[in-house]
Image (tube, rainbow, N blue to C red; front, side, top):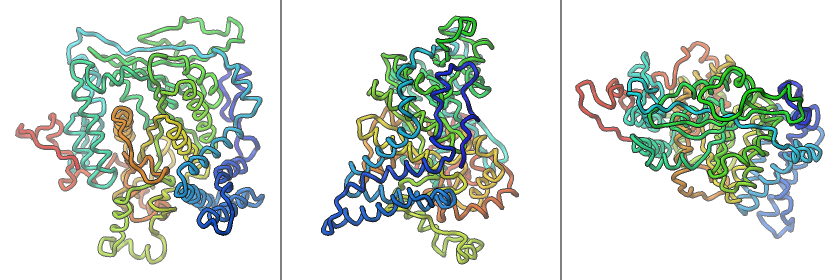
Length: 602
């Protein structure tokens, strides 16, 4: 693919230095650089001895040497894009084999790939310039309203009930009507339905419930475990407007947040939502970056005062925000100095289409690494996509196999199986599932691999890392393409237990799991370094599907064009046998006759 770096330049008020720091690909084509990064991640394996009597180590080195040479061959770049999935599988297989020999060898592979990315995107000239970034970012702080005289009827519904902050809309009975589910019992029953259906794992459902219990303890004050933690940390959200991000939930919980995103309608909407929050005892604080060109004339500098605001006027709204891909150095320096008495949690959530996604990941990685070096108590957070190569549990593998048995497979699927249209999932190595969707392209695979490598390396270096599997969701960016929107509906209708989540449902669950990771800090047992982040899996059913994601795409897309576009999950979960929501959930967990019912989480 040929990138166009001029398609996303920094805003016009940026300095020439900021424009010079814009992350660009080294050449006019992205593929050669991508291949260099992939190949670099294999080189630590090539350091293994090649002695004939060295057994497994020598054999692995020979295999990897061949793959390494193929990646760097001139001819590979010409057809890599069409055949990238096969190459990426072989690379992950090599990394997994390296981890079986030594966990440290696998970590070195990840580190080598990251180093190549850094040298590709950050030239010596740019790195020298970033050391002179200076104090170009000022802090604009907004806070939600607190009024102890407000009665309940005037409070924002989600502001004083911390459990309700995790609420979302769910279908009632047949799915023809929807209600806002914001009670402990209602949300718990929804989790029970998702887990029983196979769209998320039982441990993830239980951990979300545990967070809801902490939130339930927080009524009337900030003395609970959850409130004490929120008072001690600052959430830095790189990509604050992300539909699956935790911004909305954290703001309603009264957290301190640093919102980093480009200026525009999305960021302005986020700011306005904070300004409209009202509470009698919870106050959300949001720090926003304002880029100030220190070399500009006084007439070009902001005329408004900096500090704390309860509301922002149009002049400020038009200027707050930064561009990760050009302002990464200034952002890192700013974060290092911000809220020094609190711990930072950096959420790496920024997304862009195509090749820009890799550059955005490179910028976030630069920021994360620099901040962690200066503030080692920082925590890093990522969302792992199930539509990449990722580790799965034994239970998921077994369930997938069971769903392919002749006695279970629907009759209409059997001709497709015989014709090779529906194929079993591909496991690159033991419990390492290839959930890749070819439509996403090689840049997406590289971007997610870079984040996975950083999670592995940072964890080895003693940095706390939260990296949970997040489901496919109906975000605006996803459903903006008719083919993708149809595929989501088709797969959900034809191939259980796949579920296309509504963004609010996914955001609520993933935010709760992030909080659980940060507060519980329970060790995750794993046999392999690439299985380190196997806990808290909300895979949307992909890990348990009987067929590979790529093989179900055509028939699902075709079917999806004729299906009604619904909400998650339209008519498939909320059935009595899955413990789904009933009308009683609208009344604080009481049935129509007023009696309480029991909620059993699977």
